[in-house]
Image (cartoon, rainbow, N blue to C red; front, side):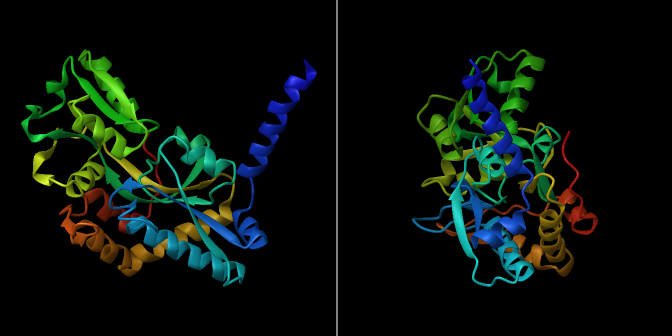
Amino acid sequence: MKMKTLVPLALALAAVGASAQDTLKKVADSGKITLAYRESSVPFSYLAGPGKPVGMMVEISEAIAAEVKKATNKPNIEIAWQAVTSQNRIPLLTNGTIDLECGSTTNNTARGKDVAFAINHFYTGTKLLVKKNSGVKDFADLKGKTVATTAGTTNFQVLRKYNQDKNLDMNIITGKDHDDSKLLVESGRAVAFGMDDILLYGLKANDKNPADWDVVGEALQVEPYACMLRKDDPQFKQLVDRVIGGMMKSGEFEKLYAKWFTSPIPPKNQNLQVPMAPELKKNLTDLSDKPAT
């Protein structure tokens, strides 16, 4: 019986050690920084074809890696990329597999118990991606119907609470990533995909027939996105915030936003046409990392 308790204890101690690790020392000692990317979080972090990911937060991740090279005085540090999903991004960060995750992760108090967040870089709300001929215009139209969302996201919790509060009797099913969730609607297994509005606009823009889709509904809530890093590592958080805050102060962040949100983007040169939200404009000066509750 004692042997069975030793393994979980060892794993628990290893996890604590990884989460409290000095990231800059870890990177300097190993000669490598591992950056996370998402495969379908358009336009933050996604694959536009085989090979390296693209997106606004991919560029910001690269800027952070460049600053790490300066801070450690090691210009030859290798930059490695690791794909993550909504479900595994936090475990892979806390166990040391990845060192930084910048994409479409909501900064909230629940996640703040396990990880730390940098300055908020976007604000979004849950809406619905539907086929144009679905007849669904808002959440009330989902009564008694099957709705998809992505496993491991805050949207699942938001939809479940809304379903209970409004007695809609929805059947909520999950995909492993955003492309998978969209496929549930495309194949007729669900009538709508509930997710952060900006990600839905990106999925629609990259579809082979964008005109077949609509993003509908009043946003259920407004939540911030932020880069995610390990807890109890103030030196690395200071560096990440310095890079993002510096870009916001200099105007470089606004240029990046225009490149990815209001200009044609790969792979199909679609323009998302999503102007900067008032909350984000305000945070260009506030530089807040305040979480959603």
